[in-house]
Amino acid sequence: MSNSRVRDRAEGRMTQAERTALSDRRMFAAAIELINERGTQKTTLKEIGERAGYSRGLANYRFGSKDGLMMELFEQFDEVWKEHLGQYTGDSTGIHAVQQAARALRDFLKKESGYMRAMYLLWYECLGHDSDMRSNLARHHDVYRKDAQRWIEVGIAAGEIRPEIDAKQFAVHYCAFIFGIVYQWLVNADALELDAVFDNYIDNTVAVLANPDHNKETAHE
Image (cartoon, rainbow, N blue to C red):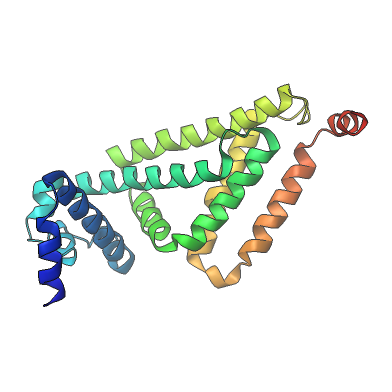
């Protein structure tokens, strides 16, 4: 029996909701492949549907437009990233949260480099004009900065982080490192020793943030 017939029989036992979720995942995977191959401008809904193994019109029926599919792809990526990040950071704050967030990104790059590359292509191509994607991206950046700012503020309040650290500005610099290193990695991964880059960033960040007075108090406890 052919693979396609086996797949059809397996899908036939699914509920409608399960089939919809499966087709969405396949179309998102196809979109990622096509964006990496030719960019967003040359990727069409028709090709996405066909690459996923469905009819030409399914992607258009499901998402309405290419912009609709790309926006949904972005939201799916954000959910995947937040779940991955949460596995590393949990409820931690302060220096530990910064360390774990950096490690989360390092490992995500290794695990999901194709996904990350597709999203960066999508993001950068939306910057040349006002769009829902650009507005959505701006909102997500704001959330990332506020998360980092909160980590630092909590660390300062606990005495773990130097009180003179500007939490808001640290968050900007943190996000500049995160997005900048991903960009360099995607341009030429061979030029970077990824583990060494992140180890160095973590060590330097701890040295800048750590409150020596807190460390002395902890040592005496």
